[in-house]
Image (cartoon, rainbow, N blue to C red; front, side, top):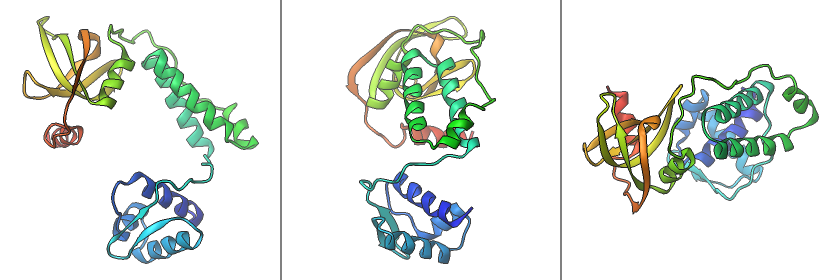
Length: 227
């Protein structure tokens, strides 16, 4: 990785973090020595980037700092375009429209040579007849996850038994062509995955669930990692 690219990536990395990041952690992430990181951080500070911290403690960046426009290479653009195409084919109209809006904003920042690359993209996501329809609103489910609203629905399991569930929705996961809603189930008192196409009478409850350490998304991911 060229030094200029690494400096830019360090800024992006610090902006994503919610706590101080040590030089050792940065060195491991970028596969360079800690001495190189010290020099890079000082170079960024000297150029006006608002990074605070010190060696041995960690570094944080002022989140109000605005980066210059992001530049993409041809492969990155192709990956973005493919992802947006998949959103259009495997989610719903509202989310697809948001994806297209984001892509237009990206296109508006591109220099002429990269605009030309967009016209030469040869990797696509095509509509599939394997897509399994669902009754619930994909956008409504996403909003419940974002706002941490409890939800209630009827669920038809693989034995054709229906139960009413109240869950704390944590994530939507795609196992094409199936979408799963992952959450903490109050009935089973454990994490459960529910096929979106087997949900009915979906209701957003006016109750916000807490961010309990043993019931949040991080806890779920840690659990499946060790299964």
